[in-house]
Length: 118
Picture 1 (tube, one colour):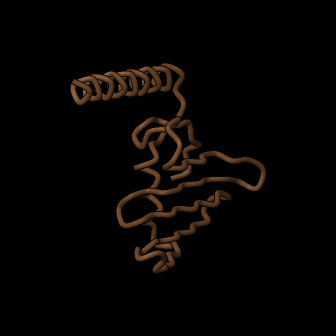
Picture 2 (cartoon, helix red, strand yellow):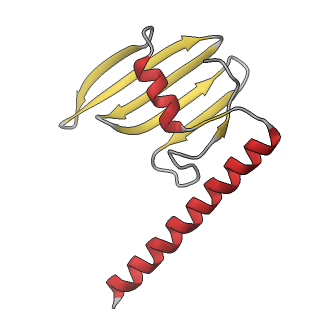
C-alpha cells in the first residue's frame, strides 16, 4: 500500500513541477525576456572552445570542474560524469545563476532569465 502511495505522491510532485515550468515559460514568452535552462547552459560551457576543464579523482569518482570567462560573465560547472552538481554564472557585480543539485527549487529544464550573450 505504501509503495502505491509513494508512486502517487511522486506523480503529483512531477505534475506540479511540470506545471510550474510551463507557467515560467509562458511568462518569459509574454515578457520577451531571454531564457536558458541549466542543461542548455551546461552544454554551452562544456562545448565552448575556451572552457578550461580539470578532472579530479575524489572518493572513488571522477569529478570535472569547468571554468569559462566570456562577455564579462564567469561560468563555473561542476559535474560527476553527465550529472550536473553545480552551475554558476556571475558578473563581477551580481550572480546570474546559482544551481545546486541538492536543492529542489530549480529543475534542470526550467527556463531562467539570462542576458543574451551567446
